[in-house]
Length: 379
Image (cartoon, rainbow, N blue to C red; front, side, top):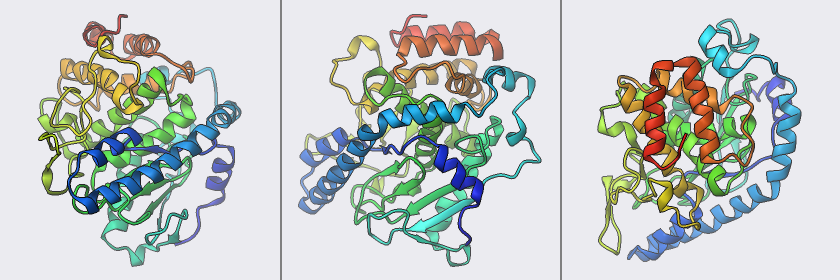
């Protein structure tokens, strides 16, 4: 397999500074370690927790550079055509036309180490993990193309993914320029590339990094995680042909828990990572508040994401049919409107979605307003 082409290298050079966004939060990993009876399993989760903590510190160190680089990179794009107008009129820009070259997908193998990207793997030597990541990433790119997007940075930047990161590493993360997948421990978690929505979730952190540079704390952090949850879930629906009435449509991380369920020390039986339609679901590894009135003030971004997650799920269910129609187009237009600040609040984001809906799906604005009001965000 050849190295990524020059355009990809240029795109990386101008892209925001790296920030590691993981599918499992540091807080959740700490709580899992405290609620497991298996000593070996505890050890692998603690090891993952420490590695995730290191990755989060890297993100915190680079957050200011991320915002600065984003401003420089955005200057290369036409500012006079809003994303909502592009979706409504069919204008997607020169890089997103049917004739444009789509990006390539490159796979690397860390072979149990934590050095990135690892050893390049040619397609002729793909093993199941390599092929799974290659195929799913290609499908995510096709999903983005439906929205008029050319890959992560909207410049045909190549996708780079590394598998077999670390030993029994139970996480997946967007490193800032590439995707990284751990193999899980085999007892609690399966390999993290096994869940298609996890792959789409983490790749969408790259889109957010470029488009809005959302911070990773407070409500902005909750939005950062929620946007990835929304696009991960809708990608999974599109991939499987599920409509909004299918109960599986709103469960995140399906196939991630080994054996389908895990019983924690406190007796709670968990079968999924998060539930967008019911964030308080006690069968989720990470129950979340589903209304702003339930915010305590010490939540992790992964917890706060439950509020905008539920708003989107309610909105999509009200629209009916397939969430990859008007519902996701409204969210995509909002996430790419170039008006969101890194410290965007729930209320500000909700108002942006109302503006997008008025342009793209005006008959759905009442349903959208009701969805936001249900989770305690007044618009």
